[in-house]
Length: 587
Image (cartoon, rainbow, N blue to C red; front, top):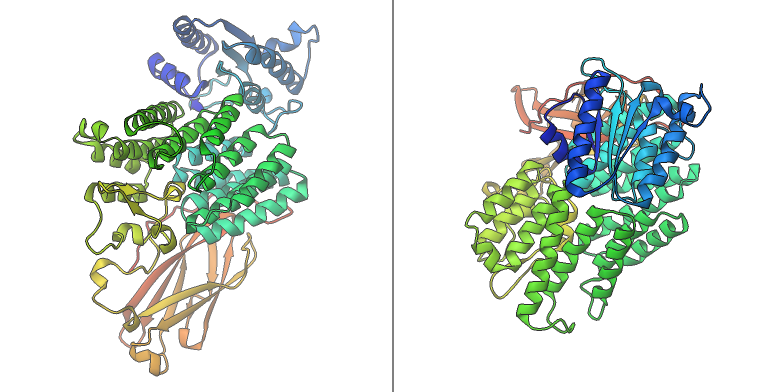
Protein backbone atom coordinates (compact mmCIF):
# COMPACT_ATOMS: atom_id res chain seq x y z
CA UNK A 1 0.00 0.00 0.00
CA UNK A 2 1.13 3.56 -0.49
CA UNK A 3 0.79 6.54 1.87
CA UNK A 4 1.05 10.05 0.43
CA UNK A 5 1.12 12.93 2.94
CA UNK A 6 0.84 15.80 0.47
CA UNK A 7 -0.63 16.26 -2.99
CA UNK A 8 2.21 15.94 -5.42
CA UNK A 9 2.93 15.09 -9.04
CA UNK A 10 -0.10 13.43 -10.64
CA UNK A 11 2.00 11.02 -12.73
CA UNK A 12 3.91 9.78 -9.67
CA UNK A 13 0.65 9.19 -7.78
CA UNK A 14 -0.81 7.36 -10.73
CA UNK A 15 2.23 5.06 -10.96
CA UNK A 16 1.90 4.23 -7.29
CA UNK A 17 -1.80 3.52 -7.67
CA UNK A 18 -1.24 1.25 -10.65
CA UNK A 19 1.52 -0.61 -8.83
CA UNK A 20 -0.21 -1.12 -5.48
CA UNK A 21 -3.88 -0.44 -6.38
CA UNK A 22 -4.16 1.67 -3.21
CA UNK A 23 -3.41 5.35 -2.65
CA UNK A 24 -4.00 7.35 0.55
CA UNK A 25 -3.88 11.15 0.25
CA UNK A 26 -3.95 13.63 3.14
CA UNK A 27 -2.56 16.93 4.32
CA UNK A 28 -4.36 19.14 1.76
CA UNK A 29 -7.41 21.43 1.72
CA UNK A 30 -10.69 19.76 0.73
CA UNK A 31 -11.01 21.30 -2.73
CA UNK A 32 -7.39 20.59 -3.74
CA UNK A 33 -7.48 17.06 -2.39
CA UNK A 34 -10.79 16.21 -4.05
CA UNK A 35 -9.65 17.61 -7.39
CA UNK A 36 -6.43 15.61 -7.16
CA UNK A 37 -8.29 12.38 -6.35
CA UNK A 38 -10.71 12.99 -9.23
CA UNK A 39 -7.85 13.58 -11.66
CA UNK A 40 -6.04 10.38 -10.67
CA UNK A 41 -9.27 8.36 -10.82
CA UNK A 42 -10.22 9.77 -14.22
CA UNK A 43 -6.80 9.05 -15.74
CA UNK A 44 -6.73 5.45 -14.56
CA UNK A 45 -10.39 4.83 -15.39
CA UNK A 46 -10.16 6.26 -18.91
CA UNK A 47 -7.14 4.16 -19.85
CA UNK A 48 -8.47 0.95 -18.30
CA UNK A 49 -12.08 1.50 -19.37
CA UNK A 50 -13.41 1.22 -15.80
CA UNK A 51 -16.30 2.97 -14.06
CA UNK A 52 -15.65 5.31 -11.11
CA UNK A 53 -17.56 5.18 -7.82
CA UNK A 54 -17.28 7.95 -5.26
CA UNK A 55 -18.12 7.87 -1.52
CA UNK A 56 -17.88 10.54 1.16
CA UNK A 57 -17.66 9.29 4.72
CA UNK A 58 -19.28 12.42 6.13
CA UNK A 59 -22.37 11.79 3.96
CA UNK A 60 -22.78 8.13 4.89
CA UNK A 61 -25.41 8.80 7.57
CA UNK A 62 -27.40 11.23 5.40
CA UNK A 63 -27.57 8.82 2.48
CA UNK A 64 -29.02 6.12 4.68
CA UNK A 65 -31.55 8.50 6.27
CA UNK A 66 -29.89 8.19 9.68
CA UNK A 67 -28.22 11.53 10.27
CA UNK A 68 -26.12 11.92 13.38
CA UNK A 69 -24.37 8.58 13.12
CA UNK A 70 -21.24 8.00 15.17
CA UNK A 71 -17.91 7.83 13.29
CA UNK A 72 -17.93 4.04 13.73
CA UNK A 73 -21.41 3.68 12.23
CA UNK A 74 -20.50 5.93 9.32
CA UNK A 75 -17.37 3.87 8.75
CA UNK A 76 -19.43 0.68 8.72
CA UNK A 77 -21.79 2.16 6.14
CA UNK A 78 -18.91 3.09 3.82
CA UNK A 79 -17.22 -0.31 4.16
CA UNK A 80 -20.43 -2.21 3.44
CA UNK A 81 -21.25 -0.02 0.44
CA UNK A 82 -17.77 -0.48 -0.96
CA UNK A 83 -17.81 -4.21 -0.32
CA UNK A 84 -20.63 -4.68 -2.80
CA UNK A 85 -19.01 -2.52 -5.47
CA UNK A 86 -15.53 -4.02 -5.17
CA UNK A 87 -16.46 -7.66 -5.46
CA UNK A 88 -18.90 -7.38 -8.36
CA UNK A 89 -16.59 -6.00 -11.03
CA UNK A 90 -13.32 -4.07 -11.39
CA UNK A 91 -13.67 -0.31 -10.96
CA UNK A 92 -12.01 2.78 -9.50
CA UNK A 93 -13.32 3.65 -6.03
CA UNK A 94 -12.71 7.03 -4.38
CA UNK A 95 -13.46 7.26 -0.64
CA UNK A 96 -13.08 10.91 0.37
CA UNK A 97 -13.81 13.04 3.41
CA UNK A 98 -12.28 10.68 5.96
CA UNK A 99 -11.92 12.59 9.27
CA UNK A 100 -9.58 11.49 12.04
CA UNK A 101 -12.50 10.19 14.11
CA UNK A 102 -13.69 7.89 11.35
CA UNK A 103 -10.19 6.72 10.56
CA UNK A 104 -9.76 5.55 14.14
CA UNK A 105 -13.29 4.16 14.52
CA UNK A 106 -14.13 0.48 14.91
CA UNK A 107 -16.30 -0.76 12.05
CA UNK A 108 -18.06 -4.04 12.67
CA UNK A 109 -16.20 -7.12 11.54
CA UNK A 110 -13.01 -5.37 10.49
CA UNK A 111 -9.74 -7.12 11.20
CA UNK A 112 -7.90 -4.37 12.99
CA UNK A 113 -10.31 -1.74 14.19
CA UNK A 114 -9.81 1.08 11.64
CA UNK A 115 -11.75 2.35 8.65
CA UNK A 116 -8.71 1.87 6.42
CA UNK A 117 -8.46 -1.77 7.56
CA UNK A 118 -12.12 -2.33 6.70
CA UNK A 119 -11.63 -0.87 3.23
CA UNK A 120 -8.53 -3.01 2.65
CA UNK A 121 -10.46 -6.08 3.79
CA UNK A 122 -13.27 -5.38 1.34
CA UNK A 123 -10.77 -4.56 -1.39
CA UNK A 124 -8.52 -7.61 -0.87
CA UNK A 125 -10.26 -10.03 -3.25
CA UNK A 126 -11.04 -7.56 -6.05
CA UNK A 127 -9.27 -6.18 -9.07
CA UNK A 128 -10.41 -2.62 -8.32
CA UNK A 129 -8.35 0.48 -7.61
CA UNK A 130 -8.86 2.29 -4.30
CA UNK A 131 -8.14 5.97 -3.55
CA UNK A 132 -8.70 7.32 -0.02
CA UNK A 133 -8.70 10.99 0.93
CA UNK A 134 -8.20 12.38 4.45
CA UNK A 135 -9.75 15.71 5.49
CA UNK A 136 -6.96 16.49 7.98
CA UNK A 137 -5.37 19.53 6.31
CA UNK A 138 -2.62 20.23 8.85
CA UNK A 139 0.81 20.70 7.35
CA UNK A 140 2.60 17.36 7.07
CA UNK A 141 -0.29 15.48 8.69
CA UNK A 142 -2.50 12.63 7.59
CA UNK A 143 -5.56 11.35 9.43
CA UNK A 144 -4.79 7.86 8.23
CA UNK A 145 -2.05 5.65 9.69
CA UNK A 146 1.47 6.81 9.03
CA UNK A 147 4.84 6.49 10.70
CA UNK A 148 4.05 9.52 12.83
CA UNK A 149 1.03 8.10 14.71
CA UNK A 150 0.65 5.18 17.03
CA UNK A 151 -1.80 2.98 15.11
CA UNK A 152 -0.40 -0.43 16.05
CA UNK A 153 -2.26 -2.36 13.36
CA UNK A 154 -1.25 0.01 10.58
CA UNK A 155 2.37 -0.22 11.73
CA UNK A 156 2.16 -4.03 11.71
CA UNK A 157 0.71 -3.97 8.20
CA UNK A 158 3.53 -1.78 6.96
CA UNK A 159 6.14 -3.99 8.64
CA UNK A 160 4.61 -7.05 6.97
CA UNK A 161 4.78 -5.29 3.59
CA UNK A 162 8.50 -4.59 4.10
CA UNK A 163 9.07 -8.27 4.90
CA UNK A 164 7.10 -9.28 1.80
CA UNK A 165 9.28 -6.96 -0.29
CA UNK A 166 12.37 -8.66 1.11
CA UNK A 167 13.52 -5.61 3.10
CA UNK A 168 13.34 -6.70 6.77
CA UNK A 169 15.66 -3.88 7.86
CA UNK A 170 12.83 -1.38 7.53
CA UNK A 171 10.43 -3.57 9.51
CA UNK A 172 12.28 -3.39 12.85
CA UNK A 173 11.50 0.24 13.82
CA UNK A 174 7.86 -0.20 12.78
CA UNK A 175 7.51 -3.34 14.88
CA UNK A 176 8.97 -1.68 17.95
CA UNK A 177 6.43 1.12 17.74
CA UNK A 178 3.63 -1.33 17.01
CA UNK A 179 4.42 -3.31 20.15
CA UNK A 180 4.29 -0.16 22.26
CA UNK A 181 0.98 0.91 20.70
CA UNK A 182 -0.65 -2.49 21.35
CA UNK A 183 0.64 -2.60 24.91
CA UNK A 184 -0.71 0.87 25.67
CA UNK A 185 -4.08 -0.24 24.25
CA UNK A 186 -3.95 -3.53 26.19
CA UNK A 187 -4.45 -5.42 22.91
CA UNK A 188 -3.09 -8.95 23.49
CA UNK A 189 -4.07 -10.07 20.01
CA UNK A 190 -2.08 -7.21 18.50
CA UNK A 191 0.91 -8.06 20.68
CA UNK A 192 0.76 -11.67 19.49
CA UNK A 193 0.91 -10.55 15.86
CA UNK A 194 3.79 -8.20 16.67
CA UNK A 195 5.80 -11.05 18.24
CA UNK A 196 4.99 -13.24 15.22
CA UNK A 197 6.27 -10.61 12.80
CA UNK A 198 9.42 -10.21 14.92
CA UNK A 199 9.97 -13.95 14.51
CA UNK A 200 9.38 -13.76 10.80
CA UNK A 201 11.81 -10.86 10.49
CA UNK A 202 14.46 -12.86 12.38
CA UNK A 203 13.93 -15.82 10.04
CA UNK A 204 14.40 -13.57 7.02
CA UNK A 205 17.63 -12.23 8.50
CA UNK A 206 18.95 -15.73 9.12
CA UNK A 207 18.76 -15.58 12.93
CA UNK A 208 17.28 -19.04 13.30
CA UNK A 209 17.40 -19.42 17.09
CA UNK A 210 15.84 -16.00 17.74
CA UNK A 211 13.17 -16.75 15.14
CA UNK A 212 12.38 -20.15 16.66
CA UNK A 213 12.03 -18.71 20.16
CA UNK A 214 9.81 -15.81 19.08
CA UNK A 215 7.61 -17.93 16.83
CA UNK A 216 7.01 -20.43 19.65
CA UNK A 217 6.00 -17.54 21.92
CA UNK A 218 3.72 -16.12 19.23
CA UNK A 219 2.06 -19.49 18.66
CA UNK A 220 1.27 -19.85 22.37
CA UNK A 221 -0.11 -16.31 22.54
CA UNK A 222 -2.29 -16.93 19.49
CA UNK A 223 -3.67 -20.03 21.19
CA UNK A 224 -4.32 -18.06 24.38
CA UNK A 225 -6.47 -15.49 22.56
CA UNK A 226 -8.10 -18.00 20.20
CA UNK A 227 -6.46 -16.59 17.05
CA UNK A 228 -6.42 -19.74 14.87
CA UNK A 229 -5.18 -18.03 11.66
CA UNK A 230 -2.23 -16.60 13.62
CA UNK A 231 -1.44 -20.01 15.07
CA UNK A 232 -1.40 -21.45 11.55
CA UNK A 233 0.95 -18.74 10.29
CA UNK A 234 3.31 -19.32 13.24
CA UNK A 235 3.33 -23.08 12.57
CA UNK A 236 4.13 -22.45 8.91
CA UNK A 237 7.03 -20.13 9.73
CA UNK A 238 8.43 -22.64 12.23
CA UNK A 239 8.27 -25.33 9.56
CA UNK A 240 10.10 -23.07 7.11
CA UNK A 241 12.98 -22.70 9.58
CA UNK A 242 13.89 -26.31 8.83
CA UNK A 243 14.66 -25.44 5.19
CA UNK A 244 17.64 -23.37 6.33
CA UNK A 245 19.50 -26.53 7.28
CA UNK A 246 18.68 -28.10 3.91
CA UNK A 247 16.13 -30.51 5.44
CA UNK A 248 12.57 -29.20 4.81
CA UNK A 249 9.67 -30.46 6.92
CA UNK A 250 6.73 -31.01 4.51
CA UNK A 251 4.61 -32.72 7.17
CA UNK A 252 4.68 -29.60 9.37
CA UNK A 253 3.81 -27.45 6.35
CA UNK A 254 0.89 -29.75 5.55
CA UNK A 255 -0.36 -29.35 9.12
CA UNK A 256 -0.12 -25.55 8.82
CA UNK A 257 -2.18 -25.74 5.64
CA UNK A 258 -4.87 -27.78 7.43
CA UNK A 259 -4.96 -25.21 10.25
CA UNK A 260 -5.43 -22.38 7.74
CA UNK A 261 -8.24 -24.27 6.02
CA UNK A 262 -10.02 -24.98 9.31
CA UNK A 263 -9.78 -21.27 10.15
CA UNK A 264 -11.22 -20.30 6.76
CA UNK A 265 -8.01 -18.45 5.85
CA UNK A 266 -7.80 -19.03 2.09
CA UNK A 267 -4.74 -16.85 1.61
CA UNK A 268 -2.82 -18.55 4.41
CA UNK A 269 -3.78 -21.97 3.04
CA UNK A 270 -2.46 -20.96 -0.39
CA UNK A 271 0.92 -19.93 1.04
CA UNK A 272 1.22 -23.11 3.13
CA UNK A 273 0.32 -25.16 0.02
CA UNK A 274 3.05 -23.35 -1.94
CA UNK A 275 5.80 -23.98 0.62
CA UNK A 276 4.69 -27.61 1.00
CA UNK A 277 4.97 -28.01 -2.77
CA UNK A 278 8.38 -26.32 -2.85
CA UNK A 279 9.60 -28.57 -0.03
CA UNK A 280 8.71 -31.67 -2.07
CA UNK A 281 9.29 -30.41 -5.62
CA UNK A 282 12.66 -32.13 -5.99
CA UNK A 283 11.42 -35.53 -4.77
CA UNK A 284 11.41 -38.20 -7.51
CA UNK A 285 7.91 -38.87 -8.77
CA UNK A 286 6.31 -35.91 -6.99
CA UNK A 287 3.54 -34.39 -9.21
CA UNK A 288 4.96 -30.89 -8.98
CA UNK A 289 3.32 -29.68 -12.21
CA UNK A 290 -0.19 -30.38 -10.91
CA UNK A 291 0.56 -28.97 -7.47
CA UNK A 292 2.03 -25.71 -8.78
CA UNK A 293 -1.02 -25.31 -11.03
CA UNK A 294 -3.34 -25.88 -8.04
CA UNK A 295 -1.42 -23.37 -5.93
CA UNK A 296 -1.57 -20.79 -8.69
CA UNK A 297 -5.36 -21.24 -8.82
CA UNK A 298 -5.56 -20.69 -5.06
CA UNK A 299 -3.64 -17.42 -5.28
CA UNK A 300 -5.76 -16.22 -8.19
CA UNK A 301 -8.82 -16.91 -6.04
CA UNK A 302 -7.63 -14.45 -3.37
CA UNK A 303 -6.00 -11.95 -5.80
CA UNK A 304 -2.53 -12.45 -4.29
CA UNK A 305 -0.06 -11.37 -6.96
CA UNK A 306 2.98 -11.90 -4.76
CA UNK A 307 1.99 -15.51 -4.07
CA UNK A 308 1.35 -16.08 -7.77
CA UNK A 309 4.78 -14.63 -8.59
CA UNK A 310 6.62 -16.98 -6.20
CA UNK A 311 4.58 -19.92 -7.55
CA UNK A 312 5.64 -19.12 -11.12
CA UNK A 313 9.25 -18.66 -9.96
CA UNK A 314 9.48 -22.08 -8.31
CA UNK A 315 7.49 -23.76 -11.10
CA UNK A 316 9.97 -22.39 -13.66
CA UNK A 317 12.92 -23.38 -11.47
CA UNK A 318 11.64 -26.95 -11.15
CA UNK A 319 10.98 -27.19 -14.86
CA UNK A 320 14.49 -25.94 -15.67
CA UNK A 321 16.12 -28.47 -13.31
CA UNK A 322 14.18 -31.63 -14.17
CA UNK A 323 15.62 -34.33 -16.40
CA UNK A 324 12.90 -34.38 -19.05
CA UNK A 325 10.96 -37.38 -17.74
CA UNK A 326 7.82 -35.33 -17.02
CA UNK A 327 6.57 -35.43 -20.61
CA UNK A 328 7.06 -31.73 -21.33
CA UNK A 329 9.00 -32.28 -24.51
CA UNK A 330 12.49 -31.60 -25.79
CA UNK A 331 15.06 -29.29 -24.34
CA UNK A 332 14.01 -26.36 -26.49
CA UNK A 333 10.35 -26.68 -25.57
CA UNK A 334 11.16 -26.99 -21.89
CA UNK A 335 13.39 -23.92 -22.00
CA UNK A 336 10.70 -21.86 -23.74
CA UNK A 337 8.12 -22.84 -21.12
CA UNK A 338 10.52 -22.05 -18.27
CA UNK A 339 11.32 -18.68 -19.90
CA UNK A 340 7.60 -17.89 -20.11
CA UNK A 341 7.10 -18.68 -16.43
CA UNK A 342 10.15 -16.66 -15.38
CA UNK A 343 8.91 -13.70 -17.41
CA UNK A 344 5.47 -13.95 -15.83
CA UNK A 345 6.99 -14.09 -12.35
CA UNK A 346 9.23 -11.11 -13.09
CA UNK A 347 6.28 -8.99 -14.27
CA UNK A 348 4.26 -9.82 -11.14
CA UNK A 349 7.17 -9.11 -8.80
CA UNK A 350 7.53 -5.70 -10.44
CA UNK A 351 3.79 -5.01 -10.05
CA UNK A 352 3.88 -6.10 -6.41
CA UNK A 353 7.00 -3.99 -5.75
CA UNK A 354 9.00 -6.97 -4.46
CA UNK A 355 12.69 -6.38 -5.31
CA UNK A 356 13.74 -9.54 -3.42
CA UNK A 357 11.67 -11.78 -5.71
CA UNK A 358 12.60 -9.73 -8.76
CA UNK A 359 16.34 -10.10 -8.09
CA UNK A 360 16.12 -13.87 -7.58
CA UNK A 361 14.00 -14.32 -10.69
CA UNK A 362 16.39 -12.23 -12.76
CA UNK A 363 19.29 -14.36 -11.49
CA UNK A 364 17.67 -17.73 -12.14
CA UNK A 365 16.32 -16.59 -15.52
CA UNK A 366 19.80 -15.47 -16.56
CA UNK A 367 21.38 -18.76 -15.41
CA UNK A 368 18.81 -20.98 -17.12
CA UNK A 369 18.57 -18.97 -20.35
CA UNK A 370 22.03 -18.28 -21.82
CA UNK A 371 20.54 -16.36 -24.75
CA UNK A 372 18.77 -14.02 -22.36
CA UNK A 373 21.92 -13.51 -20.31
CA UNK A 374 24.22 -12.79 -23.24
CA UNK A 375 21.85 -10.15 -24.60
CA UNK A 376 22.87 -8.02 -21.64
CA UNK A 377 26.56 -7.82 -20.92
CA UNK A 378 25.82 -6.11 -17.59
CA UNK A 379 23.41 -8.79 -16.37
CA UNK A 380 25.34 -9.51 -13.16
CA UNK A 381 25.78 -5.84 -12.26
CA UNK A 382 22.08 -5.20 -12.79
CA UNK A 383 20.99 -8.04 -10.52
CA UNK A 384 23.60 -7.15 -7.92
CA UNK A 385 22.22 -3.61 -7.93
CA UNK A 386 18.70 -4.83 -7.09
CA UNK A 387 19.99 -6.97 -4.20
CA UNK A 388 22.08 -4.04 -2.97
CA UNK A 389 19.01 -1.80 -2.93
CA UNK A 390 17.45 -3.87 -0.11
CA UNK A 391 20.72 -4.50 1.70
CA UNK A 392 20.83 -8.19 0.72
CA UNK A 393 24.56 -8.88 0.76
CA UNK A 394 23.90 -12.63 0.69
CA UNK A 395 22.05 -12.22 -2.62
CA UNK A 396 24.98 -10.25 -3.99
CA UNK A 397 27.30 -13.09 -2.94
CA UNK A 398 25.22 -15.58 -4.97
CA UNK A 399 25.54 -13.33 -8.02
CA UNK A 400 29.32 -13.22 -7.48
CA UNK A 401 29.37 -17.03 -7.35
CA UNK A 402 27.31 -17.32 -10.54
CA UNK A 403 29.67 -14.96 -12.34
CA UNK A 404 32.88 -16.59 -11.05
CA UNK A 405 31.92 -20.26 -11.40
CA UNK A 406 33.02 -23.16 -9.15
CA UNK A 407 36.22 -22.74 -7.15
CA UNK A 408 39.12 -25.12 -7.92
CA UNK A 409 39.12 -26.55 -4.38
CA UNK A 410 35.34 -27.00 -4.29
CA UNK A 411 34.98 -24.80 -1.19
CA UNK A 412 32.23 -22.15 -1.08
CA UNK A 413 33.37 -18.52 -1.10
CA UNK A 414 33.86 -16.80 2.24
CA UNK A 415 30.85 -14.48 1.79
CA UNK A 416 28.57 -17.53 1.56
CA UNK A 417 30.37 -19.73 4.09
CA UNK A 418 30.13 -17.06 6.80
CA UNK A 419 26.36 -16.66 6.30
CA UNK A 420 24.85 -20.08 5.58
CA UNK A 421 24.97 -23.42 7.45
CA UNK A 422 27.32 -25.99 6.02
CA UNK A 423 24.42 -28.40 5.50
CA UNK A 424 22.72 -25.96 3.15
CA UNK A 425 25.87 -25.16 1.18
CA UNK A 426 26.50 -28.91 0.80
CA UNK A 427 23.36 -29.05 -1.38
CA UNK A 428 24.85 -26.53 -3.86
CA UNK A 429 25.27 -28.22 -7.24
CA UNK A 430 26.68 -27.37 -10.65
CA UNK A 431 25.49 -28.11 -14.17
CA UNK A 432 27.77 -29.51 -16.85
CA UNK A 433 27.94 -26.00 -18.28
CA UNK A 434 29.32 -24.69 -14.98
CA UNK A 435 26.13 -22.95 -13.83
CA UNK A 436 25.25 -23.14 -10.11
CA UNK A 437 22.16 -24.99 -8.90
CA UNK A 438 21.50 -22.68 -5.98
CA UNK A 439 19.61 -24.32 -3.08
CA UNK A 440 15.98 -23.20 -2.97
CA UNK A 441 16.29 -22.28 0.70
CA UNK A 442 18.97 -19.68 -0.10
CA UNK A 443 16.25 -17.27 -1.25
CA UNK A 444 14.26 -17.66 2.00
CA UNK A 445 16.73 -15.65 4.10
CA UNK A 446 19.15 -12.75 3.91
CA UNK A 447 21.64 -13.90 6.56
CA UNK A 448 24.27 -11.63 8.00
CA UNK A 449 27.86 -12.84 8.63
CA UNK A 450 28.25 -15.02 11.72
CA UNK A 451 30.21 -13.28 14.51
CA UNK A 452 33.71 -14.72 14.91
CA UNK A 453 33.72 -16.54 11.57
CA UNK A 454 37.38 -16.56 10.45
CA UNK A 455 38.14 -14.27 7.55
CA UNK A 456 40.29 -15.43 4.63
CA UNK A 457 43.31 -13.60 6.09
CA UNK A 458 42.88 -15.50 9.36
CA UNK A 459 43.01 -18.96 7.84
CA UNK A 460 46.78 -19.19 8.20
CA UNK A 461 46.33 -18.77 11.94
CA UNK A 462 44.88 -21.91 13.52
CA UNK A 463 41.66 -21.15 15.38
CA UNK A 464 42.77 -23.26 18.35
CA UNK A 465 45.54 -20.78 19.13
CA UNK A 466 43.11 -17.92 19.79
CA UNK A 467 40.88 -16.93 22.70
CA UNK A 468 37.24 -16.03 22.18
CA UNK A 469 34.57 -14.19 24.13
CA UNK A 470 31.44 -16.27 24.77
CA UNK A 471 28.18 -14.60 25.84
CA UNK A 472 25.34 -16.67 27.29
CA UNK A 473 21.83 -15.39 27.98
CA UNK A 474 20.86 -17.17 31.20
CA UNK A 475 17.17 -16.15 31.09
CA UNK A 476 15.18 -17.47 28.15
CA UNK A 477 12.74 -14.65 27.38
CA UNK A 478 13.86 -11.08 28.17
CA UNK A 479 10.93 -8.72 28.75
CA UNK A 480 10.81 -4.97 29.51
CA UNK A 481 11.76 -3.75 32.99
CA UNK A 482 12.80 -7.21 34.21
CA UNK A 483 16.53 -7.94 34.69
CA UNK A 484 17.97 -10.73 32.53
CA UNK A 485 21.32 -12.34 33.36
CA UNK A 486 24.16 -12.50 30.84
CA UNK A 487 27.30 -14.54 31.51
CA UNK A 488 30.61 -13.59 29.87
CA UNK A 489 33.47 -16.06 29.50
CA UNK A 490 36.87 -15.83 27.85
CA UNK A 491 37.43 -19.22 26.21
CA UNK A 492 41.01 -19.94 25.10
CA UNK A 493 41.61 -22.44 22.33
CA UNK A 494 43.63 -25.60 23.10
CA UNK A 495 46.75 -24.01 21.57
CA UNK A 496 46.47 -20.78 23.51
CA UNK A 497 48.80 -20.25 26.55
CA UNK A 498 45.78 -19.61 28.81
CA UNK A 499 44.43 -23.10 28.12
CA UNK A 500 46.98 -24.59 30.56
CA UNK A 501 47.19 -21.68 33.03
CA UNK A 502 44.64 -19.64 34.98
CA UNK A 503 43.16 -16.64 33.20
CA UNK A 504 44.84 -13.36 34.13
CA UNK A 505 42.68 -10.78 35.98
CA UNK A 506 41.12 -9.33 32.82
CA UNK A 507 38.36 -6.73 33.01
CA UNK A 508 35.15 -6.95 30.99
CA UNK A 509 33.38 -3.61 30.57
CA UNK A 510 29.67 -3.64 29.57
CA UNK A 511 27.87 -0.83 27.73
CA UNK A 512 24.25 -0.58 26.61
CA UNK A 513 23.83 1.04 23.18
CA UNK A 514 20.08 1.48 23.54
CA UNK A 515 17.33 2.27 26.01
CA UNK A 516 18.38 -0.24 28.66
CA UNK A 517 20.54 -0.55 31.76
CA UNK A 518 23.31 -3.03 32.36
CA UNK A 519 25.15 -3.55 35.61
CA UNK A 520 27.65 -3.91 37.03
CA UNK A 521 29.65 -1.75 34.65
CA UNK A 522 32.69 -4.06 35.01
CA UNK A 523 33.24 -7.74 35.62
CA UNK A 524 36.19 -10.12 35.89
CA UNK A 525 35.92 -13.12 33.51
CA UNK A 526 38.29 -15.21 35.65
CA UNK A 527 35.78 -14.93 38.52
CA UNK A 528 32.77 -15.68 36.31
CA UNK A 529 31.57 -12.31 34.99
CA UNK A 530 27.80 -11.95 35.12
CA UNK A 531 25.79 -8.88 34.12
CA UNK A 532 22.14 -7.90 34.66
CA UNK A 533 20.53 -6.46 31.54
CA UNK A 534 17.31 -4.46 32.14
CA UNK A 535 15.60 -3.21 28.95
CA UNK A 536 12.93 -0.53 29.14
CA UNK A 537 11.11 -1.27 25.90
CA UNK A 538 10.49 -4.22 23.59
CA UNK A 539 12.51 -4.64 20.43
CA UNK A 540 16.11 -5.22 19.48
CA UNK A 541 18.78 -4.05 21.95
CA UNK A 542 22.51 -3.86 21.23
CA UNK A 543 25.14 -4.35 23.94
CA UNK A 544 28.90 -3.86 23.75
CA UNK A 545 31.43 -5.81 25.83
CA UNK A 546 35.08 -4.71 25.93
CA UNK A 547 37.71 -7.05 27.36
CA UNK A 548 40.84 -5.25 28.59
CA UNK A 549 44.10 -6.09 30.26
CA UNK A 550 44.16 -3.66 33.24
CA UNK A 551 47.90 -4.13 33.75
CA UNK A 552 48.71 -2.56 30.37
CA UNK A 553 45.44 -0.78 29.55
CA UNK A 554 45.24 -2.76 26.29
CA UNK A 555 41.87 -3.56 24.67
CA UNK A 556 42.09 -7.25 23.79
CA UNK A 557 38.71 -7.72 22.16
CA UNK A 558 35.44 -5.86 21.70
CA UNK A 559 32.23 -7.66 20.78
CA UNK A 560 28.65 -6.56 20.29
CA UNK A 561 25.51 -8.59 20.91
CA UNK A 562 21.94 -7.99 19.78
CA UNK A 563 19.15 -9.21 22.10
CA UNK A 564 15.47 -9.30 21.18
CA UNK A 565 13.13 -8.25 23.97
CA UNK A 566 9.52 -9.42 23.65
CA UNK A 567 6.51 -7.58 25.11
CA UNK A 568 5.62 -8.36 28.69
CA UNK A 569 2.33 -10.22 29.03
CA UNK A 570 -0.05 -9.05 30.34
CA UNK A 571 -0.15 -5.36 31.23
CA UNK A 572 0.95 -2.28 29.27
CA UNK A 573 4.11 -0.39 29.98
CA UNK A 574 4.85 3.27 29.54
CA UNK A 575 6.24 3.80 26.04
CA UNK A 576 9.52 5.62 25.70
CA UNK A 577 11.29 7.08 22.73
CA UNK A 578 13.93 4.69 21.38
CA UNK A 579 17.51 5.78 21.79
CA UNK A 580 19.53 6.39 18.61
CA UNK A 581 21.33 3.30 17.42
CA UNK A 582 25.08 3.78 17.07
CA UNK A 583 26.93 2.17 14.24
CA UNK A 584 28.27 -1.25 15.15
CA UNK A 585 32.03 -1.60 15.71
CA UNK A 586 33.88 -4.82 16.29
CA UNK A 587 37.50 -5.12 17.26
